[in-house]
Image 1: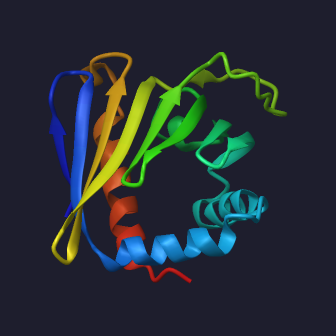
Image 2 (image 1 turned 90 degrees about the vertical axis):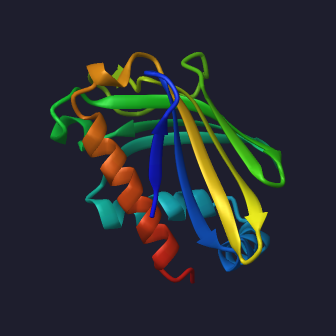
Length: 175
């Protein structure tokens, strides 16, 4: 269902299709929740309930209706994969009606409550976009890593988890 294409050792794309109805459902959720600032907290809480508290700490700031900054600490995902605990700080920007850009930026001033050591996630950018193709959406998620993914022993497992997450998102009814 989802296909990984590596354009270089550090630049990759995940391609997949979704029914056009998926966009309609997400748009309806956005319209319903766009003024509810607690929706992010609820999403994280629901996500943690499903994943055994994968996100152990987070903070975010909504800058405007198209931009937010986020800091997140992953509790055990990377330790379970045999690597150190990871955190990420990033800016999320809705760059058009069909595209979202995530720029990793360790200079974001958001603080996390958790103490202890964690390494920065080795990702530079993530770009998600889609084009409409009849009754389907062709979705592309592009990402760039800090180093050659061959140096990340857990990369194949992480890609498999991303693909599984995509399949789950596309097959789970949206409330």
